[in-house]
Image 1 (cartoon, helix red, strand yellow):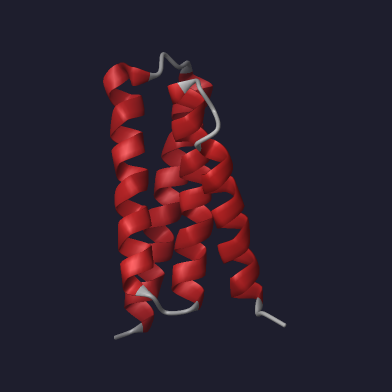
Image 2 (spheres, rainbow, N blue to C red):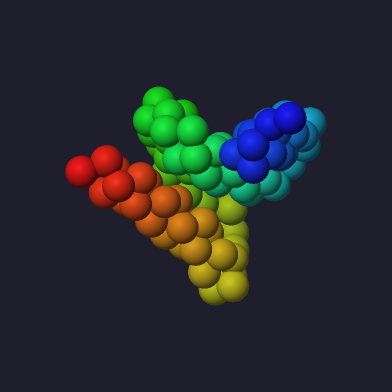
Amino acid sequence: MGTIWDIFGYIGTVIVLYSFTIEDIKWLRFINSIGCLFWIVYGIGISAPPTIIVNGCILIIHTIWFIKGGFKIDEVWIDRIWTLVIISLIFIFFYFASKI
């Protein structure tokens, strides 16, 4: 039986795979961002910097796209997007801080 971290990895996998079935690019990117967050948590849990870095970069790319206007959003969506980014950066920070 797997660990709790494996569960995060499998959930992230399902979410990312599902996101590619979505035709609307704004929702594809949003759902994919959620999958990236699960993969970041998984990467932290198993101490896999490449997993953390690639998914953090993907999340940043999605966020930049949202901010540049690829997705016309109101203040509520901006808050949600920034929350995703901040949570990701906090996880990354704590991961690397725990290695010191």
